[in-house]
Image 1 (cartoon, helix red, strand yellow):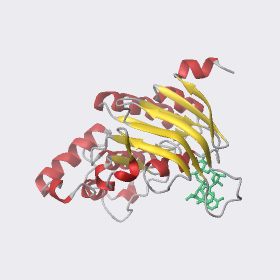
Image 2: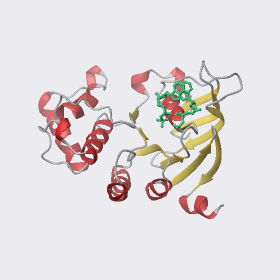
Image 3: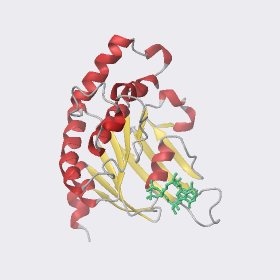
Image 4: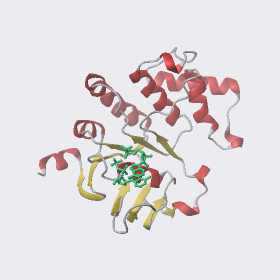
Length: 233
Ligand code: ADP
Ligand code: ADP
């Protein structure tokens, strides 16, 4: 079975009009090792989709399957789904290591590393995201791009089977985005991480992904490799 499958998923917020769906009959499959990006304009349903897979929202219809099992039948700590939020949601008063170690804390009790092991994991993650030596710096003193890397390291810390990224480069200026998107792609390929990202930026989606899913007004309107999606008008 694929790592993630959405089958005929619809979602309507409780306060929305009866016929107003954030997602409508969405089918989506992500296989282990793939980097899939959902591309679409603001309000298209991208964040709702990520929140559904993270278990923060419930579908009004359809099902979210992980390894072929209905997500609702898997305890949260066993799902192996990590989410990097759009606004990073870092703790500004903690240092870099403290922020990343928080990601480790979301592992199950028995799996939590001791302080020495934790520091080794933090250093390895910092190395991966290009921030070696940053462990003791306060997060508030970092640039936007550096904070983005810390948020990525924190999301990677528990070793999620599926890493979800909400507008991973959204807060950064264009030059930095163009550089980071290629780094991200390299990192995911190197780690073999399965990724589901959402963005409104076409260039970012095409540069980062094995497959692009285009969403508009809550529906999937196109899906394929970047080349396939690019070629179709
Ligand atoms: P995107 O991430 O593509 O910008 P969203 O998933 O945030 O899209 O939004 C999809 C639709 O659902 C929009 O019409 C939005 O206004 C609506 N929506 C999103 N979150 C909520 C919410 N908490 N309550 C009600 N409506 C919401
Ligand atoms: P994003 O680009 O991440 O989708 P949004 O502006 O759509 O950001 O949403 C930001 C926050 O506002 C989210 O927590 C979302 O749930 C909430 N939200 C979005 N649209 C609505 C809405 N129509 N009613 C209530 N909450 C909403």
